Length: 210
Image 1 (cartoon, helix red, strand yellow):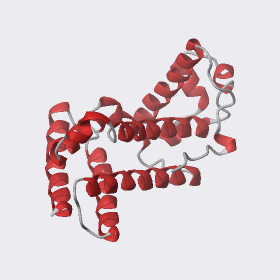
Image 2: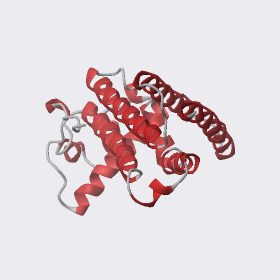
Image 3: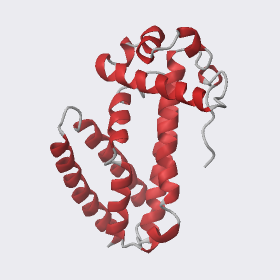
């Protein structure tokens, strides 16, 4: 699948080429996420982001034309990082793991990371904010469904394509629901929730392999 093109009105005005400009982009992203967590994304504006990041609004506008472009950049960068993890899991020694070991390692690589929950929870409700975000979300869902389907075939599933498509979409929606349910929970409860999720995931994967 080709990577989705960033809509022109949401693109970075210029690409960071030096370490200091990369750090500036990171500060803008982290400040935006922090403010969203505190106030919600609809209440956040570029002035507040710049103030939180301790930079001038002018510096922010060197890279981002508006608030929506910052939000899109956060979502696009985060989703691409998840696709990169998937690509890593389609090569190397991980291919020698049993199906349960494989999906456990995949879960730990993605869903147990602090960054995953932090960004995922910050983006909740944003996918309907602009049509472009919905298209980005749909691309990701299609990509992940195809990834799951390839792995299930690799581990020997004989289910029809339609059956696997439905199962993969269900697994994606389940993961999103679990991520939402972690909001406001302490680390112990979050870990317990992910353990329950993995058992449920294993039940559904095993049914696809039998």
